[in-house]
Length: 231
Length: 231
Image (cartoon, rainbow over all chains, first blue to last red; front, top):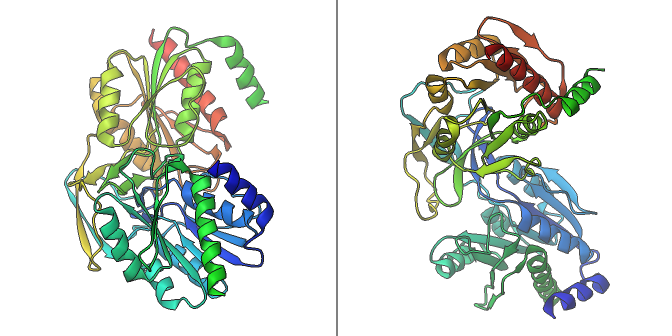
């Protein structure tokens, strides 16, 4: 079957040997104070699976991860970050040397303007929080890219293809992985995912529900095919 | 040594047999939309350890937990909640039947006024978030308690004893577990904790750095002694 075919393909291929890859994963946390934060829902599992599949395929792989309790896949170098700004700095430090960049993290678009040094005390009345935009890491990668194959993710709750197509164009990515996170069996916390792969030429591949590592292996296969076409 | 003494004490005591206990744990998540939330930093480990220690000591134990990936301690009944309001409802449903209530969770004081049904789209400009207070579960338990032995936690970043003493009085708790979460080896994500136990009569016990299960066993021992004094 498909899963076995993928596994045997990977075990023998080394099809990304000599390539350098970077994956972002998890949900960033933007502190309001030492105990409170603005979070983005993400278990990190999809990104960790992509890092594992890239490594399996022979790529030297860096995983830039927001806080989570997942074990680092064997052979992968993990860089721990908390906020969108820290993730931005870690990605930009490495970007120039990469062949493949997969942005699977759920990155906060906004962060609290102020980060209080001491815990904010409750006083009962309502409160207004000022938020300011964070750096758009994917868009910056899209602008800076030269040889890099850039993969974005779009977690949507409505108008999946419309939003995902628009994001692909706007961010200048080479492949967009779109999923409707409201579907059972897709998205946050689920061991499985249901995604569609979108490409700049209009091609769309709808994948069935698979566990996240098999989805990741399929993504890596698509990346490898397109990288070899570029060369 | 102390740790072994505690373990053997627990293995043979059953000193809370016939008692009913409820523990809250983890950090609540208050959604802004399907992907973003306001979170409270807490690994849930301290609360899970307290539930385990209560069960070890023979109490019938309920664990009301905000989202986390920790395994449920054997023999403990887990009730999964996400928000402060859900935690409030779960605690109040059970409160009247309990002998011991330990509020170890990090509960959001404020939640976003609006929870958008669809993912909020980024438009580049800054954003203002309206926050409103959530129910104060510990204070309500303090008001309603009859026979219940009520334990609160105070995670502070400054003026530890001043804030903790004030909280103990204000919330009408029988024991307050205070820790300075900025200390290395204490608080969030750490496998160990360094706490002080405060009592309404002014007594204070400073515990050394211990792993969280040993801290929990020590708390349970203090609870059991005071419960038997009440009877």
